[in-house]
Amino acid sequence: MKFGVIGAGQMGAGIAQVAAQSGFTVVLRDMEDRFLERGRQVIERSLAKLSEKGKLDGTPEEVLGRMTFTTDLAAFADCDLVVEAIVENEGVKAQLFRDLGGIVKPEGILASNTSSIPITSLATASGRPERFIGMHFMNPVPLMQLVEVIRGYSTSDDTAAFVESTARKMGKTPLSCNDFPGFVSNRILMPMLNEAIQCVMEGVAEPEAIDGIMKLGMNHPMGPLTLADFIGLDTCLAIMEVLHRGLGDDKYRPSPLLRKMVQAGLLGRKSGRGFYTY
Ligand SMILES: CC(=O)CC(=O)SCCNC(=O)CCNC(=O)[C@H](O)C(C)(C)COP(=O)(O)OP(=O)(O)OC[C@H]1O[C@@H](n2cnc3c(N)ncnc32)[C@H](O)[C@@H]1OP(=O)(O)O
Ligand SMILES: NC(=O)C1=CN([C@@H]2O[C@H](COP(=O)(O)OP(=O)(O)OC[C@H]3O[C@@H](n4cnc5c(N)ncnc54)[C@H](OP(=O)(O)O)[C@@H]3O)[C@@H](O)[C@H]2O)C=CC1
Image 1 (cartoon, rainbow, N blue to C red):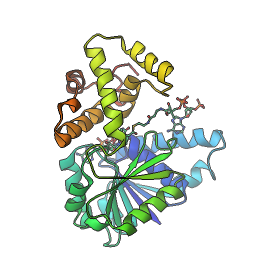
Image 2: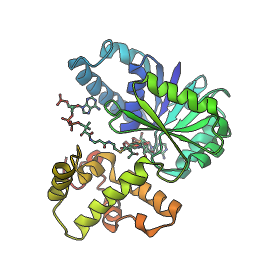
Image 3: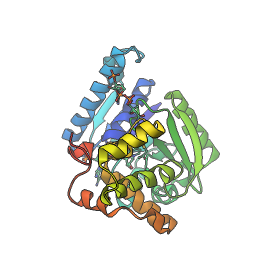
């Protein structure tokens, strides 16, 4: 199978890596060579770590040998499945799917790794709504078990079955849900992270104490502010906006502190500073 991934950021690089680990031929695209190079380095580090621990089938070189890095969308023409993992912005994603709809062979399936944006509207933009689906991997992709599979209004049974079987071949567990803002994962997770940010803003406690309380008290592997920094505060804000707009309830209002930090360019781990400094 030829597996396409668009966006070589933290999610796209992880999805491409795990697809190649699973034996698929992979093409990974970003807009500029320097972003592809950054993605390749992340993949090389992750493969080295997995290999060191005996958790990799074959060598890192064999896995990398199944991957091609490109800036050219035409390289996706013969892909059986293309997963998009670019910025969490509906207009930008819709334009990409309009383009892809005219490039990828008609029987190819298009999927979005979006955290929250309506699958049905991206499916319409693609011009092939029956062969369009949400394939939502979790961060960090090489370590997390879940793929949340989101069916759009017109997604066919064959498309859902193909994507679920592909997720299993990648060593993941697919779980399905319908197309509602934030799906299941982020409808439940993101309000908790937003509330932790609101606690910082209101001076309820210092970030370290908030994270410590949730880690030690609730056995969460990461505190909510560490996790928000890990996901990216720009992505967290984009998801909260979709929940707020899409569900029309002020309980999903993004914390003003979250908004201000994104305006200040404090995006978390990827920009070097968020609630913590990296
Ligand atoms: C926003 C959305 O739309 C959806 C989302 O994804 S929401 C986010 C979902 N993800 C989470 O909630 C993650 C929560 N965090 C965790 O589960 C854990 O902290 C974790 C699995 C990320 C890390 O595990 P941990 O037990 O905390 O230990 P940590 O020491 O950091 O890492 C474990 C090992 O994995 C390695 N590791 C981390 N990332 C890796 C990667 N990408 N590839 C390979 N190895 C990796 C680490 O280097 C470490 O190796 P050593 O044991 O040799 O030091
Ligand atoms: N972060 C997370 O924990 C998770 C995120 N997701 C979702 O995955 C997707 C990607 O997130 P993530 O990998 O974290 O984000 P990153 O910021 O790490 O990467 C985003 C990617 O999108 C590209 N991009 C940015 N702007 C544009 C544009 N205008 N046109 C085309 N490409 C663009 C970036 O390229 P460049 O480097 O050139 O800017 C980069 O490759 C989002 O939809 C997000 O919601 C899903 C699960 C978890």
